[in-house]
Each structure stands twice: as C-alpha cells, then as structure tokens.
Length: 109
Image (cartoon, rainbow, N blue to C red):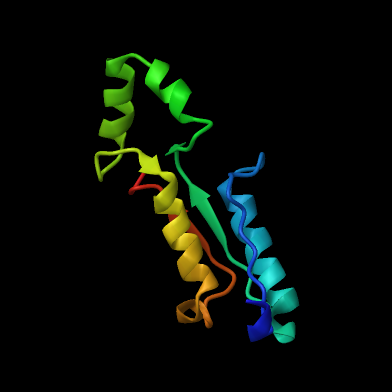
C-alpha cells in the first residue's frame, strides 16, 4: 500500500461506543486525510470464530449455537476469512475510490 501513496485503516472490533460512533469517526478521518491520498475505512464484524473465540463457541450448548445461527440470514457464524476478504478488498486497488465507509460484515444481522 505504501507504494500507492495511500493508507487504509480498519477497526476490526466494534468500539465501546458502538458501530454508529465508529462510522462517524471513519467518515471524519476520511474527510481530514483524503487530500493526503489516504483512504480510511472500517469493518464492523459480527461474532467471528477466531482462534480466541472458537473454544468459547464450542463450549456453548447446541441450542445456543442454533439460536445464534438462526439470527443470521446466511445461517452461519462468520469465520476469520470472511472478515479478511473484506479487508483485502479495502486494501486493494479495486477500492481506490472507497473511503469513509464502515462495512458491516455480519451475514445480514
């Protein structure tokens, strides 16, 4: 990215103030840094089965897992690769004109 003269910034976890505050902050930074050629974007993930989260997920009762899965229109829980794919897009040249956005990576929740 550095050879493109731009940077990208992501917040991989929801802030303590919630996704709305993060979206406003992302847009504000995009406005402030855009004239320097900096793209600022964020992701707002849902429950994602990472190495750290998976053991807790597996300790849940099957009924609790089923309830969580049923809440998601895509009927599954996110994997780390689901978040990584969106981040890779934002870091790619395909997203050169994308800035100031927070992308929900939630499976439709």
